[in-house]
Length: 211
Image 1: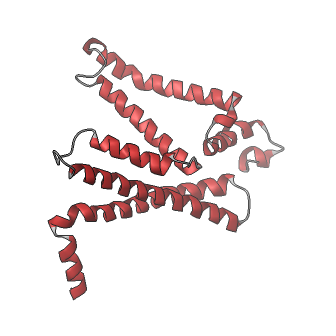
Image 2: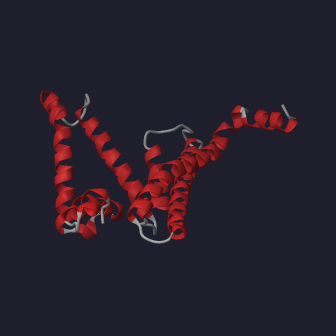
Image 3: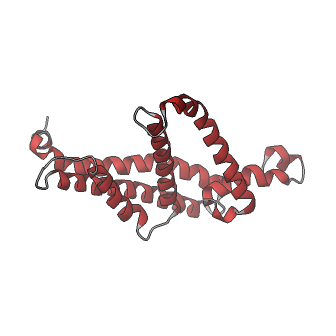
């Protein structure tokens, strides 16, 4: 192994630097994950539903991928930095249960909330919100949760079917009567599936190519 590689490995493997080097690794992981998630999604959505030249479409894809990667990387650094500062702050110098919430609160406001309601940020935040709701629902039926023991099994059995039904019923109602309130990419998908199904001029745009 080259001497410089050995020196780097020796440095990054020292325990006393782990907490600080984790900030760099978190930024790297956030950027890579954001790019991996956003690029194929943007590629498909743009070429399916957007008009314009190849250059314009590629520019949109690159911008969305860059935004997603940058925001996840930035949030990861802010979150881990705040947790690190709290952990080493007096008097306790230990991590408390609310530390992660506070760090996420601040990071979420700075990266995703403050002066930024882009479509990418909206998709990320609504994705997170949906997972939070599901997680809290699961917590409510666990031992010591909000749901009484005698109702727990019934709630567990019926909660997901009701959640799915209400979600789809509500979004279809919104799409029909208040389409401007539906998130743009979802609205485009729903227009493609439901609205465009009502119109055709012949066999080609009936089954082969959707207009």
